[in-house]
Each structure stands twice: as C-alpha cells, then as structure tokens.
Image (cartoon, rainbow, N blue to C red; front, top):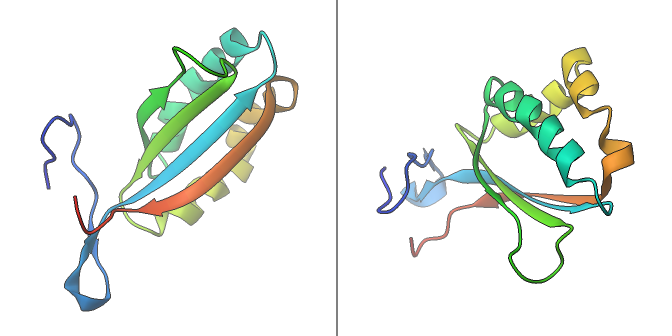
Length: 120
C-alpha cells in the first residue's frame, strides 16, 4: 500500500481481526566519539547485504541538534519471518565479517521490532 510522501511501499500482512500490519526494525545506535566515518563505511556494506536477507534500510537519520553520536535506522521487512532471517544473516560468516568493526565503533545499539499503528 503506497503511503503519501514515501518512496517505498509498506510491507503489510494480515493479523487477527483482518488488520493490515507493516513490520519494521527500529534501531538506535550510539557511536563512540569520532567513529561516524568508520560506521558509514560499515553500513555501506551492511545495508545491501541485509536487503538480500529481507531487511531494507528505508531511513538512516543523524541529528542536526542534540547527541551527535546517536543514529536512528528504520528497516522495512517483507514479512515478520524476516526478523529471524536478518538476525541469522548477521551471524553468518559474511555478516560477521561486515560487522567485525562494531566493537570499536558502537557504544550501544537498541533494536526493536515495530508494527504499524491502526491510525496510519
């Protein structure tokens, strides 16, 4: 279903009661100071890799004001099963190679599986 103002299609599935639900992964990343260039390089490899495993990066945001170490990502999922597919891809040899620099770059990361609301 197209959403006005968005360049992508929301992935939707029916849940109990017939409600259409789109699933997304929402991440908040806090970088170590001065590590944005290294993180950017890693994400340029990770985003296409994850897209091949069901996670499409549709928003990558950094602050104009506030905590400049904080980044927000929104990943679109084709279906709920893609949560597990994407996490398994991170644990696969290629995923581990891409993510290897994270320990030196990222201070913390919070990952949430999100579902669309009934009002949009």
